[in-house]
Image (tube, rainbow, N blue to C red; front, side, top):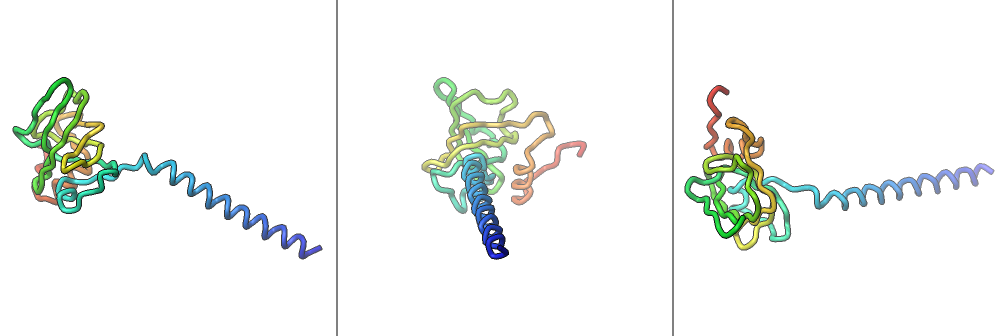
Length: 148
């Protein structure tokens, strides 16, 4: 009798371990499209990601680089002080989007141009995303807003 109970216990433990492994794998597979890594323009210039990878880029919109095209098309350059990356976006830009201001975009790098599917801009005169601040500090060009 004892060997039958022991055998059943081992089978249940093995089934539980396999079920846990499968569940973990399925959760990881489901989340892979929802995870977007942040990269600064300097990191992209040093080590460009593959064209199939969706990621986030952030920095300051370069002064004089904003060009509006036909319809809702817009191109500009984003910089962290060390490097500058061309960005192309088709859609409605946030109201607070302008040159020399912080921005974060989500998209893919295609032929050296970041093709954005989403653009986020600062929401007040002092806010800048943490990733952008860190990237600018790393390049030594970050200037804290007045009063901070």
